[in-house]
Length: 625
Image (cartoon, rainbow, N blue to C red; front, top):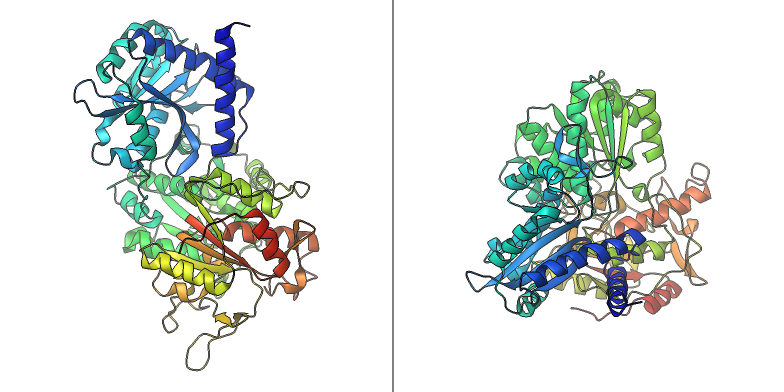
């Protein structure tokens, strides 16, 4: 083996170790092969351009979505201004390309595989995400540029891609354009060391992204838009293509977009809602959650016309076939076996809600996470949707999302939670055989184990005082009383001397407590403990979770305890309707949802002493008060 090949092998293995550390993912053989071939091609081009001192940041993690990485970000000195300049590089080994059914935003690299986003769209997303959120370029976002290098692709093939690349202001080079690429790089970078610029990008911090609801409102108004990355782009484009194809061929098209908490499902849904509405399509957004839908109506719609865009799954029980163009069913895992709407018999149906929604729309789009089903009767699964799609003779598409947007973009934290709860890496999977793993830390996300509920409250209140949003939630392990005659809430959640009420049950404010639907977003919500039904689908900067005695540690594993659960739909009062195996699955899903609501950090406290000690062995945290 030559010295050069040995060096290449060492670099590839180092990249694989760093990828595992940052994202929790193991590098595939294909990924290692791409590093070996494409990075060698790029490095040789830089050297031939006299730019060997430019820094190359390989697999650069995106701010707020660390499990999504740009192939390379080149960092150096601007050849004209002398300031920092950064070039995002997407590397491709492909030799051929075709448009996907005349859609210039999607391409086919290999006939054996499905469509992928045009590489210029990938680079545009990376470039915009870095410019928008990396603190080092806050005052000069124009210093971030993008290029695609298809180092094996001949000119007659690469010419198919140039139109959209020019539109997106992304430079595009192939095998025959290596000389042009050298001149392009020389026009970007001075022949000076780029280490200082790279250090500033890496250490410049990440600017906070805007609240999802505020961003959604701006998107609906056409004033701003979500930045979509990687599989998010693929999912978005798949839906738009399905809409065009449904009308072209007079067919029904069903799209599933699946992914974990914060993988971008709601950003995709709201982007589609805004863009399809602007195209004049009859489009609606629906959920199975009163809290989520009412929050969207209040914070995103803000006027009568846009409020009409947001609905519930049950609203389609009696809707005629193809009455609407596109139905975006967010949190479709909450779909139920039938629709029952109190006082509205015209909206009731014994048909599965998935069935009625597929019937109602020419293109129904289902966004779901099978590990977020938390109630008996929530049966919105990929298999169920596919079955009803076949019943309606619909064309079926499925785009699984990778990545973790919430929780500081930490895929490592998402993996840690899954291992803690005995959930598999795949949606709906189980992994009780693998033990929980210690938390090794992530610069973008903090876990704190509080020694008491009072300490949890103190930590989170300090975050509120620093202008962060924060909420406390708990497993349903305490009774839930109606308000007292004076309209005050009963402090049902009692742990030692600490006591707090659950969030209000009603749709109206109770004293200082906000309505149940708006507990996560309105002032006053911090003074109550939220339950799964008010927290699901929403987010806040800092989350506190009280793990009740329905999930306890025994023999170095977390096990469920039905006797401790007081949810009337799930716990000890409903043993006949909910089998033990389903109870176990749903309780783990409940805590998976609660433990993934935080954007910046998580504070945890377990009521059971053995569970608290068990968590203490896993979490090495420094309290940040």
